[in-house]
Image (cartoon, rainbow, N blue to C red; front, top):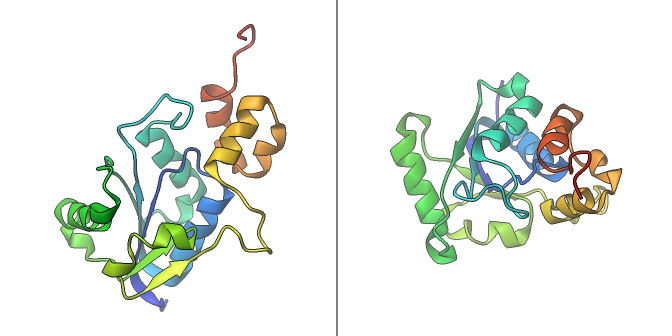
Amino acid sequence: MTFQYQHGLVVMRAQPLHSGHERVIRQMLKQCGKATVILGSIQEQGTPRNPFTYAQRKEMILNVFSAEASRLKVMGLFDINNPVQWADFVLDFMQESMPDRGVPDVYYAGSAYDAQWFAPCFEHIETVDRTDPAFPYVSGSMVRDMITIGDNRWRQFISPCNHHFIEEFMLPKKGEF
């Protein structure tokens, strides 16, 4: 099979993995021989903004993309809270952690805002925009808010194979207030 790019990269939090993230990863797998997902903020877990661990988020991705697992690598990375140095930090981490995988030749982003941090480092940027009128807008904050207030529409944005994560780790247990 011939691909447009050799190796794609995307960085996301995926708290939780939702249909917008899936759309970006799916596009990357369609266009790239190899795909790498870096999950950021691995130092954060168990909070309203970051409810899931790195291992849980990685499992969510692999649940959805199990058929492409041989071409897909998922790694976790601590944040440095320095947007100017973030792209170089990510790329240095990749070269040190997986030198056999090679340098990505394309960066994938869910919005132009997300892409801006990596624009100086990549000749090719693919923006799979979440504001596309043909695709319902979705964000992690929106999905987490739906879950928090008991709005079951969150199920429309989370793959059924990952509903158990939400039910186990985010929904209140019976008898809890």
